[in-house]
Length: 130
Image: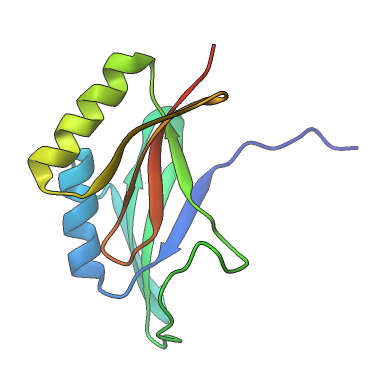
């Protein structure tokens, strides 16, 4: 059996590339590190910690269905943070940006801070339990 792979990149379909690029630029406090426009789509790419890239893709043809984490497919993306202080920093950052969030939600397996992007895609900052 081949070795288990790591995730290299995630690509999210968005409704409006300009709105989503602005949201993620403010969230990460950085501009996209790359782009693609050689297909029937426009993509903006953000490089995250550890080399993972997150692509935002606006397709030329869209099904126009709203994101719903209860449908088969993506449920949410969880971004790991180090320590409770890290979660509190992200909470404060989201509040500064005016992004609605869940507040810190504690469970036996860890603590999550959940929010959504402009298309309603579920995202969270997550601190695993010790």
